[in-house]
Amino acid sequence: MVVYPPRQRTLVFCTAFSGPSTQPWASWNVRYRRWLDAIATSHLHYDQILIVDDGSPTLPNWPGTAVMTHLGTQRPAERVVIFHFPDNLGRSAVFEYPGWFRSFTFAATYAKRYGFEKIIHIESDAFLVSQRIQEFCNSVEDDWVTFLGPRHGYPEAAIQIMVGEGLRRFYEIALRPYSDFAGKPIEMALPFTRVEHQFTGDRYGEYLPYVPADADWTTQIYPPNASSDEYYWWMAPRGSDGSKTTYQKETGSELRHTGLGYLAFMATLSVHLSCRAYFEIGTGSGNTLKAFRCDSVCIDPHFLVSQDVLQGRRRAHFFQMTSDEFFEHNDLKTYLPCGFDIAFLDGLHHFEVLLRDFINTEQCCHDRSTMLVHDCLPLNERMTERVMRIDEAEDPSTRDAWTGDVWRLLPILKKFRPDLRVQQFDCGPTGLVVCTRLDPKSSILSQNYHNIVHEFSKLSLADFSLKRLWHLFPTIDTRKLSCRPTDIPGVLFGRTES
Image 1 (tube, rainbow, N blue to C red):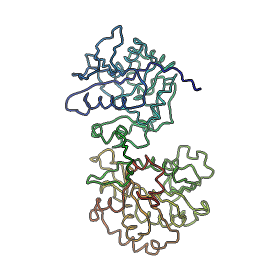
Image 2: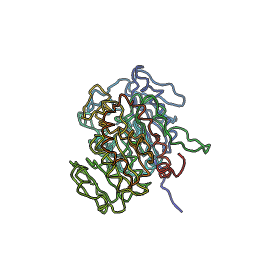
Image 3: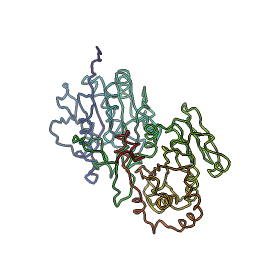
Image 4: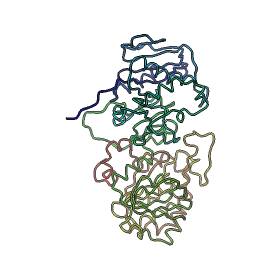
């Protein structure tokens, strides 16, 4: 018989401020109601929810919610409590946060007064997306736990669990003056006892218009996503009609990539296509290589790898040279004698170079090989210029993206290689094209290479049009596909209907 430990009396809390009506997304009935709904529909165990308000000009009139301005002797009976400070201390800068600090440490005072044994801090723009991270929070019995935020490399202060020794440390922090922390990043000042790396999450709201389907947690949600029901897909009710999943994605008039980030999707492919041999052109810092823990061959004229990319793989060959130099002096089959399972092409962003890379790589394929081509679905014409240029007037989330003119590969394949199965995946930031049914004996592209380059170098994106480019091949919804990853082989190779 399994004996479970008694559940600690648990308080969930967030800090709050509902500002002017010019920010409706931050209002009580939008931002904070959604946060409450997310907790109520989760698997999180808690006894009470506390919202600590930093002097908002108005307060909500929610049924079943207690509003307090001072602490009494008895804990409020309501499930949700709003504690309101009459004055607003606010936050004047990134490292100047007197209002947040007062609200944050007040939770320790509240918990100690009313006998809570565990505190789970989840900011109002932070969410526990997956059931597994919710159940993890339930399981923590001792520690001050947070999660690693990959974007900045910091522990994530927006989600914390304090219990046992961790709660004792929190009480000590609450007794210290704000001056001890002013001007410092709070993430580095709090005495966490454990920073978890096992869960997938980030400050996605700072750089993505969506939350990836494999996310366990997320934070930093800003307009326009803050008011979008679609953004909070994990809170949507699950269908129970047994209807078939549809992966085909409609691309509307507004062209944007709303699926999984390409690195996350590549990691999914690695597992569900049983990748044993991986080849890539354009390794850079090694983030793509890390998705594939198998024998690998990597080409890059200037490697920038500063992380552990070996990860237990038996063989990894690195060639610091251009792809043309590699194929001129090497046979890829020398290193991958059975051919590659997955290849990733992300070299020089000139279409004639990518075409050569495609031709040379295909010669080392087998009948189940998958070729991934990056950057073929740009968002605007600036991205497609042959020399990288940043437009400061452009949206900050896209101004650094550069695809060059490799988009031309898509109409080339459409015209000359109808035998291939080509699909476009909605992976940010600039798309991911997946080619299967490859043929190592095909010589159509190589025999016509010079004529193809001559013909398509004259093709402008303005004449061809972005919309036509985006509709050239089927576009797959990677969010839906990632929910049923066992369907990936069928979708890619056409063994089942998608």
